[in-house]
Length: 107
Image 1: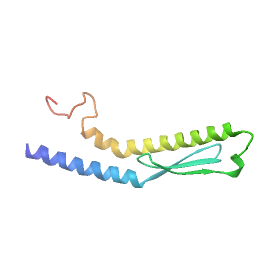
Image 2 (image 1 turned 60 degrees about the horizontal axis):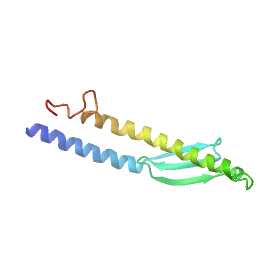
Image 3 (image 1 turned 90 degrees about the vertical axis):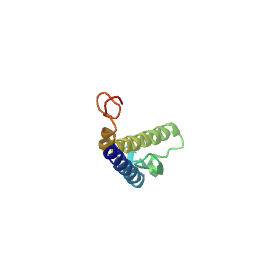
Image 4 (image 1 turned 120 degrees about the vertical axis):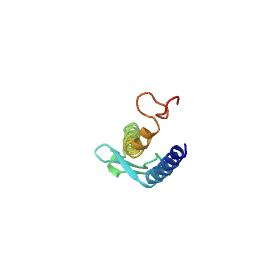
């Protein structure tokens, strides 16, 4: 039982470290061939949005709005991939595999 508790504490420490790593990491998404870029932390916080002057057409705001949404979605996809790569190995230890649970009989 003590070994199991020690393993759980190690996993908790690894999880906290991975979450901190994600919070510090940045990913970028773009749309319109780079006319609009969105920067997001690995844990999903939008930190910057850049719009090139060429993307701004006062007569066509709908296209600009679509580019902003697409860039944010692209950044979110990149953040999700980073999170899956960072947290995936840890989640596997929590019973993320077939059968779920904690990988222990009865759990």
